[in-house]
Image (cartoon, rainbow, N blue to C red; front, side, top):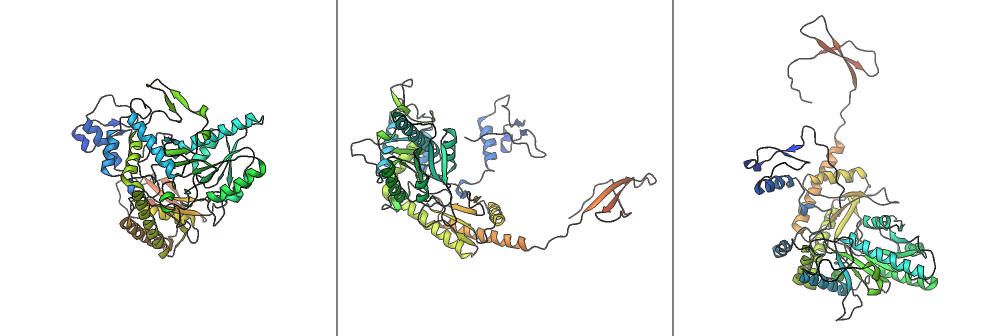
Amino acid sequence: MVLTQVHQPEEGSSTFFGSVFSSRYVQDPLPRYEMPQKSISKDAAYQIIHDELLLDSSPRLNLASFVTTWMEPECDKLMLEAVNKNYADMDEYPVTTELQNRCVNIIARLFNAPVSEKEAAVGVGTVGSSEAIMLAGLAFKRRWQNKRKAEGKPFDKPNIVTGANVQVCWEKFARYFEVELKEVKLSEGCYVMDPVKAVEMVDENTICVAAILGSTLTGEFEDVKLLNDLLTAKNQKTGWDTPIHVDAASGGFIAPFLYPELEWDFRLPLVKSINVSGHKYGLVYAGVGWVIWRSKEDLPEELIFHINYLGADQPTFTLNFSKGSSQIIAQYYQFLRLGFEGYKNVMKNCMESARILREGLVRTGRFDIISKEKGVPLVAFLFKDMSHNSAMKLATLLRRYGWIVPAYTMPVNLEHMTVLRVVIREDFGRPLAEKFLSHVAMALDELDSSSKAPLVPALKHTIEVVSCTDDANQPFMVRVLPQEAEPVKKTVPLLTGKTKGVC
């Protein structure tokens, strides 16, 4: 959700907007922030909105976003065919529900969940990883509270341990559901959570430790295996059973295909739930995420609602209710269409584009690369002199060519670092990477030339307008008063006609 506000109109604009090509159908201007009194034709409505949307940036040139911006036309067609299906109505659309269940089982087995061939996995489709994290966090909180109540211990101060590099949705979860967020600070050269420090912060009120498979800041995978081993040792020593959640929003559809030997998923006993974004490297348009639990015991039954007013009994565990079916159907299409081989090829291509981009940026001699080669296919870099202004100016200059490149400061302890980041998606191939590098070179040249430009001396004067009652042809004069001098009796005539001037 985005909080809306009515922006102040630009100078010279009005609260109405006129039409361009739609003027063939509409003659009167339409209000911007009020509902029009009369209907207009569908052609005019389309054209007005279409013209205004031309001012948006091109999604494919948005290198800030992990979210998929291209799908095959056949999948676009399937999504359009399902756009009027409300996924919440499971009884009315049983096939859609079945496709969601298939996706849950496919993902669970991809993540090595301990389910037999005929056993159903436990999980749910969500609007995105933010909702998935909320649901997983609620399950951990309720499970911890139930255990504390059974032991007769206080259950009013739950906490969760993460790295300071977590996405903002973890802060939302902590604030919305009253859980203390204990963050492991980052340090220069280590831009992800240190498992040793994380386990040190765990106490009897910790509902889980959240590990990130693909940091938003640098794309790096955190060491979930080491975290599992250290936490297992601490649990044995203290008698606690603190679990792990893996936020695999970005890396969950990368690691199984490129790094199958990497142990980060349900192969580790303490990993009880995993979230992943279907709309990132799951290769689906924005609007779908997934959360998978190791077993039914890890999802408290009291969090599941059973409703029947849309038809048959429907179990549901979600923060949302009504939502579209299109993205779920698209996710199943991608699984069916690409298979393991197809996903692996897409991820390998993304990593190759990242390599080309990384090497091109290194060749400029201007940047340090702080992202790892093993992780999410992105390149995070900063100026060698760590200049904040240069990073911000470069991002601004690249916008002139259409590229959206984020420039952001790192978390606490690393605020002196301003990082630029380019996310490589499936639709960012070698030609675009090479074009981007050429535009970076041009922007750097402009940045250098602007810094070498000679300073223009600034002259400050105080002026005073005085009337000339004795001269009808020159009714007013300007008297210029220097800053640090006695007033000079110099007059400049003000002409009453229009003038032209060049500064």
